[in-house]
Amino acid sequence: MSVPQQRITIDSFYDQAREGRLLGLRCDSGHVTVPPRHSCRVCQSQNLQAVELSGRGEILSFTDVYVKSKEFPLDTPYTLALVKLEEGGNLIGVVRGFQPAPKHGSKVLVKFEDVPEGPGKWPRTFFDLT
Amino acid sequence: MTRLCSLVSAGCARYGKREGLSAAELLYEALDEMFLNCPKLDKKDVKALYLGQAFEAFEHKACGGEVANNYGFQNVSSVRAESASSSGGAALHLGVLSILSGTYDVVICCGVEKMTTMETFEAVGVISMAADRPFEQWNGANLAALNALAAREHMRKYGTTEEQLATISVKNHRNAFENPKAYLHKEITIKDVLTSKTICSPLKLLDCSPMCDGASAVVLCSPEIATRFTDSPIDIVGSGEASDSDFVYRDEATSFRATKIAAKNALDMCDMSVKDMDLIEIHDAFTINEIIGYEDLGLCEKGKGGKFAESGATEVAGAIPVNTSGGLKAKGHPIGSSGIGQVYEVYQQISGLVSGRRGVKDPEFAMTHSMGGAGVTAFVHVFKKR
Image 1 (tube, rainbow over the protein chains, first blue to last red):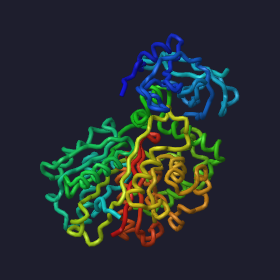
Image 2: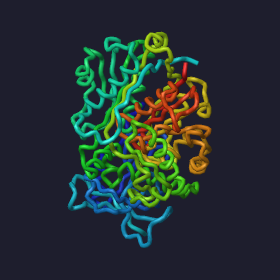
Image 3: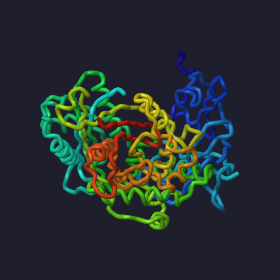
């Protein structure tokens, strides 16, 4: 069994994201895995190359979150979405600027931003309407 | 049909706000009932104890060794099993494996969670640890939100309605009403569910299981010695486990693959169909979980779970009663206990100890389904009256 050719750690993913680069991992069969992990999310291949993605995607599902968690600094309610990225792979994050409400298939652009009032280890994931 | 091991007794501490009792003390209450139900069982018979507990953040962890020794089992093997909401299912699975391997002949599988000492705001943060930390929780997902994403997609794809989700809650509250171990003793209507406050749309407060305190315990033994302890043992004839990636990595939001694989593994072991079951306890931390559970376990076609719920088939008097205990939804969801609490219900029903409206008539086969995270782990067990 081969070991991964290229790894993206959580910290390096978010460091790049903070600079405006969304990184994914592409396997030999062309599947794209986001968020980063140690194997392809489709075929489990560990032959992975880091690739820069467009950040474009569409909403698979969404929910208005009314329950406040100590672990997440944003005020409630906020709209959370599961977004399928154009090249493959998914991200979960907060939807901004939707009037009226988003729906399945709404096109978005991924943005990563630090949230001042929260702990600052990593930026948070947002989706803007395109 | 091969008997993997036998269930000879069970006990359960009442679920609810149990002020003044620690996690370990709740476990002692469950163990006391378990021994009372089985006078021929002696502490000295017990060789190992497997304890399901999900989070130590609520209270100092109820360490397996500490519980075992404080209760008076001396020098037994003792392990804590952690698998989020399926920690109880994991403890049960470990117990089955330990008997099957021939290592031990009598073991206790138990579970506990003491949750009500914490404010909801903080507790949501703790429970969210069952989601992926850097990519789900960090970006605003909690367990209710992940299940809400699944519910919204199920509604879009299959036409499932909020009323159909509510039928799960109404049924499980009705069952819990007559269960003395249940936390919520209140019958509710569809309208009550639909008008309760939104937690994560489309899930409302009454679509979500309540945080509470609780503990449960069961005794497993080798099949050949079961009649030393009881005249009416229950055999475990299927035990399946499976895992999956975190929710964010999956393109399919309306099905939990781990449940399907765990169920297939458990049913293949005993060459049974899910439709042979006389009752099933399904993980219903959120109402959508029970609907998806119907589909993933094979009770109905994919996408038909909402209609199946509405049909009344899973009422106590229906073709296949589901969550006669009241489920996690209304009996309560003290996380580490829930998977063992399901087995307590099976023990009670098959032993004929449930009277009144929620008693199933002469059940022979039963199934439990315990799920951790948003479909990250699943444990399925099949039980047969001997």
